[in-house]
Length: 343
Image 1 (cartoon, rainbow, N blue to C red):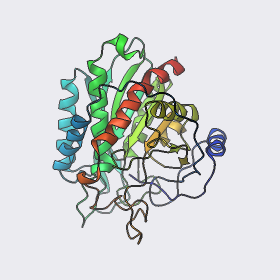
Image 2 (cartoon, rainbow, N blue to C red):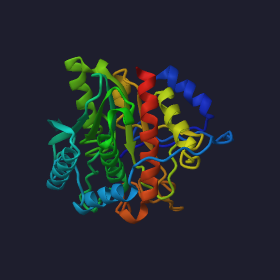
Image 3 (cartoon, rainbow, N blue to C red):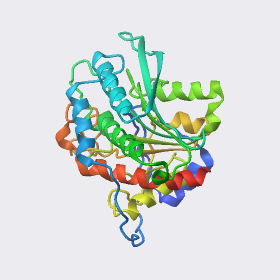
Image 4 (tube, helix red, strand yellow):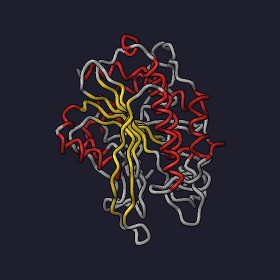
């Protein structure tokens, strides 16, 4: 992943207003932008609702499988093997799977062009309107460091795969989602060199270009992005550039399920794969915990509050199956609400 630095502390109501009126604001430099907003005293949480069929251990096994492939940068043999495994799993759920292959031009002298490939698994609904649930499945390339991206790339992909399995196993009346669902795994989210000047979000930008060229962008009613959601100490503030009503549904749903700690009443800015969709006028939201490990010395690229990000420390032992379930339960419970909102 990539983000930027937190710039200001604001109340959530202030940030929501800014997001609604000023649109997308990508971070400059580094990676996706992360800007927290001051935490407010939350109201008493509603009663805990029934949890979903999301299997935390199965989702965690999905993450472990990816890590076993090793570092998975775009264009690598390891990512090709990961893609083949993902496609096989998705097809085993009875989903229709297609891919979007393209060649990305990068600023890297070593890799000026890289073949990339998005994966799209579709679960037909009663209508051809589409709700996308997504993750990136590549990891950042490091020449001298073994970066397996258990959290950054692995956790969201493992959770998305389990979400797809659960929804595919449901009867249509159980899902209560009339729209067609697309589970999208983006290639090339990571910067090849640095997170600037278009060196990022290759797969999501390509998908949006294809949607606009075909006129199908108007059919996409909502886009949900998962990223870095496996941290044992999970906290997912609202992403301030995300569509406010979409972020609100998901946060309120998570809190209603008893996950108040994991969905704090605060906000931050992150530049990620949801931005191209927002720029195309498609409601989109990013669920990401950009505080992954602490290091008082702040020696890593993520600083003292994001110590494992983009380091060899992003390993399986830092993750929790429960965190994956928090996100899985929340998305599964929120989707019918989102579906009703966009009908």
